[in-house]
Length: 489
Image (cartoon, rainbow, N blue to C red; front, side, top):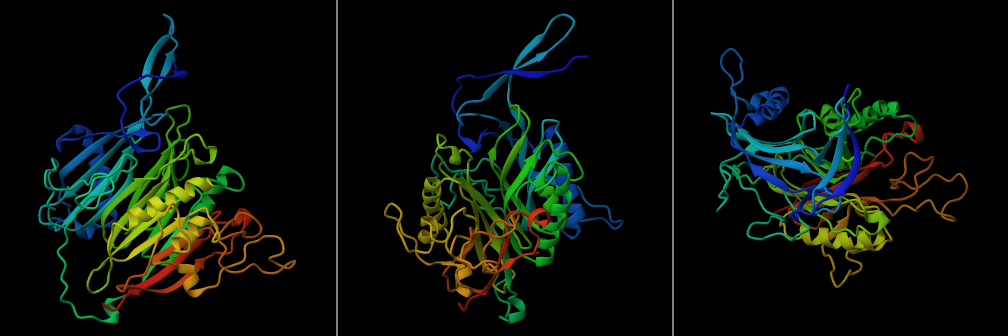
């Protein structure tokens, strides 16, 4: 019997490449729609639409769904890099009767496909991101769709879509620390409908850090914990949810499988969704583990992109790559106005948070219209990043304007669980969000900020709390919910 084992890690100097996200080089290529490697990828995408959106696919009189056409596809090899510049190589040794066979291999963790499917006679184009593990098992990372016609892509060499380059507002190029995977669409919108409160339902947004696969007790208790997460978010009826600490972990092959995106979409059927890894940290160089952010929406996600936030890899608390994920979402309101939703999970490093929050602000301000920033910012209300967002202080000569801390619109600032703040056995103030796996919540580090805009008004902001604590907690964070409606414009 032969077996392979990783013996030695070594780096070889090759042409540096930009990174797709932390630890993964950006090595992608356009794929011909007839490429046989697409067969399994298209199948998992097609099956998802059949299960959750059957009305969006043409079918014959017998109910048999028409097969889709691949309008474009792009393939990215997930080449791991320790320095974010050069591929990582390892030596694999396979014992045999004729002596050990030594092979030098690149640490490739899998492959990811971006693709779009269309159906003859359908007004919708469906965009997907499907990732394959090293065993070529497919997992769905993204599915969005809307009524579209081909966008004007200028010199794009990929028919039927527009792939914006880093930090993607039209006409602008991105910097070396930015990347986005936006799929531009052009919507045909009927703006002639009469205004009515029945045509302008409130929009509920939730921010939730789901604590990846971690548990208070044994690993087996994850099944019960993710069920509590699913119950909380599904019963909330949220229109848009921004998740943090969403993970893929190759070693989780039990009841739910390795992809938490799959776990979440089980509880949120009918939602469009985008998952973007921020950081890859493989085990033994080829065991794929990655964590990032996700946005789920009941309403069409028209565009999505992200930026890589700067980091100082020499600082222990800033070793993980952080990103800001953005989605442009069409509202259900009578004029179909759009909102821009940004999700972030900031670093444990104080210096990084102050640096990154300015980068997020510069990113956000490039988009007009309603803007919402949500996430686990790992900073308390008195810290510089939060005061910066509220426009109270500058950072390196930059000051924000027009951002409102959603919680403070309707609620007072809760006192953190610190000495002299509470009497013995005094009930803690409402509004603290961390840590639910302790006996008592200690601080507020989860936020929803809304840009002051006449086209939207904030109607309420509250905590989503199922009262679980310690081993019965759904996550180490509580979820935060904001309800918005259209303004008078």
